[in-house]
Length: 231
Image 1 (cartoon, rainbow, N blue to C red):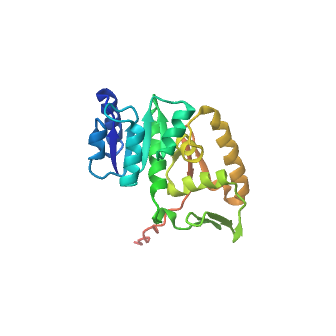
Image 2 (image 1 turned 45 degrees about the vertical axis):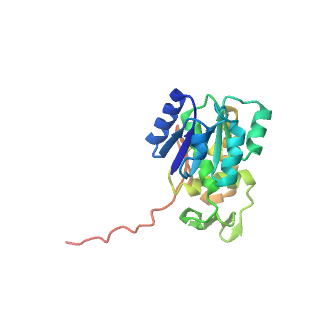
Image 3 (image 1 turned 120 degrees about the horizontal axis):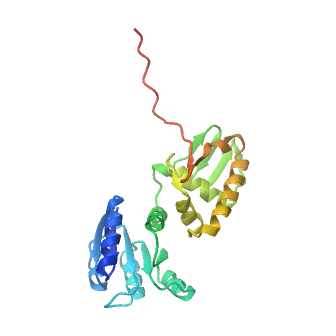
């Protein structure tokens, strides 16, 4: 995935670019609005709203109007009016400085996932011990019967299902489901997970806790074991 970092502060830009590259992203940097608007196509833009040559809100609108690229606004302006203005300008998310690398990476992953407007292999129905999760249709059934999940419960299960059995950090679930990493929401996540497991009945044990990190969905390896070789 290609990311454009639009940041005029060299020290901040270097830290961002380094962190993103260490996490496997192909990163370009623009120091002002002119460079950002003339940059080659990318998959996502991290846009500082305090640019030296133009208002970042205007740049966000122009980026969305010309190419529809997902934009995460990165700024020190954290007041509610600023957030509303940024989101209404077309930003897909709004991150306030200072922020943690883990939070930013989780938000990037969430925005990139939402920006995929076509089905992928991760959106195919997933069948596990009578439990079927259809991500394209947003339905969950157990032994052919609908499971009455709330929106948040479904969203948690979908995040885990799309991870394909890999562990998902608690912070990433909070970002994708509640758009926050606020510590006060951690208990809310625990309550929703307990209720989700209960509604999944015997298959609730498929949602496993990864101690000190997060959660994962137990998905059997589809690759059959090699045939046994006799003497």
